[in-house]
Image (cartoon, rainbow, N blue to C red):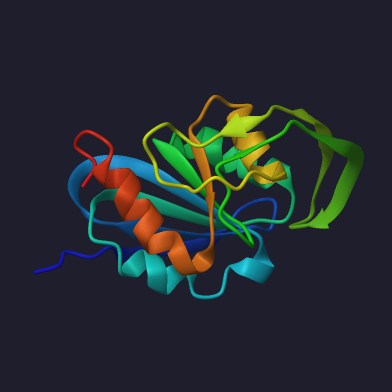
Length: 168
């Protein structure tokens, strides 16, 4: 019998980013899934199908500041960034400085340099490398990160849980 994740809450943060919380069996770890709006379709269904322990927070964000705030707030065991393709690593990213003033009524600065990143050893993320600003931003906070696609999210999260002590 599968014990899949249950969608427990949906809200919008001060940056205008949509969030959804999912809870699995007791125990486990907190996880964060981050996606831009154009890649977010189907993610709630994929997360609801995950068989695992712990919690998963989904953030649909525009820009890096809302993502960085979500990582700091949730303290996840790892972050799964949704991209157009699965990546195993990426180079340092330079983001031009900008002021965002139209998201959720809050004005904030974006930009800066974010480090190179690599998926945690032992996870099967393929060999493709590529730039991903969200993954580099997460890495700047010393949080493990992978880049996967919406279609492979469920498997990627379950595999990461399986590779983590007390993870699934």
